[in-house]
Length: 276
Image (cartoon, rainbow, N blue to C red; front, top):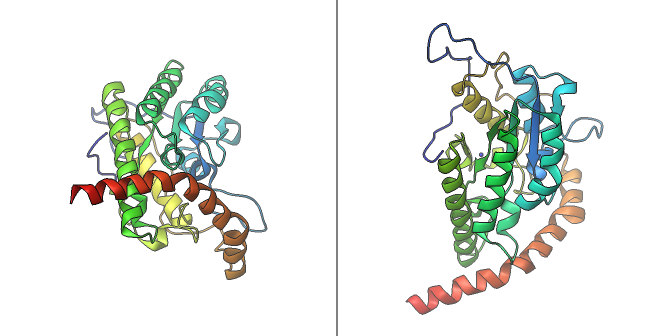
């Protein structure tokens, strides 16, 4: 899910700050980022793929199918967004671009907050040159979602805090709105997360969409069909589906990323021990 911005669900499109000022209409929308941006965690019926935050925001804004672009992909890091997704987005010339990326960077051994910040800055500037309103996110503490040993929780929390500090600096410097996922009501409720605890559930995606459209309403955009937090249109994965996903995708992913993250976690534990 601007430092210190509290995002609430949007029930109605607010009046413009100055009466008589017409609301802007978003006709073109781009969604950039990682597997959350893809929509993982919010499956459609009959193996219809993923829905997620992008289509929910598009529906809220009244963006037609030909005005919607989502080049995001699972595993994307901030550099991937810059080099592989931004060119397509720039060509699309969106009015609004949503950006959900950075968590994959924190789980890699070569994590560099300064490099993430530099890439994020370039993403924002490239899109802003086309007149796009860019909405990145700052992240919740994912260690509160996973059940991890305390030492690993400290390591992951420290990484996320370092990432958020970098994002905060960029957002303040570039003057763009930012969705603070930690401040979404229910961000740490299990109902907000899919079985893998890596991706939002349908409810979680709706919360993201509501948060994004709230920021857009504050920025003067019309939100003709506000996002509902009542789940509908998706499908609740079966127990068999849960187990299948965990065996085929979830556990291999955690094992792969865990091996990359453990050296950093070990250093955190060692430093904590030395500090006693």
